[in-house]
Image (cartoon, rainbow, N blue to C red; front, side):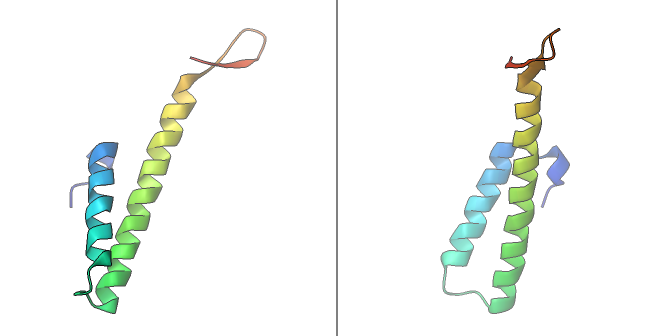
Amino acid sequence: MAKKENRSIEKAFEAMDEIIEQLEGREITLEESFSLYQQGMELLKYCGGKIDTVEKKMLQMDENGEISEF
């Protein structure tokens, strides 16, 4: 698995899709399911952080202290 910091959000979503497909399969053990779930949650947290960063960059404060979208 590539470092998450260098991963695009699109690649992270692709990785989550792969995890979901594996979890939906009936050929994995309970331990594998827990591991995949943990990986998925880490990817979800990573994506949430990336999206929050973009949202913050999209907001701009004017001279009156009012926040507006960029």
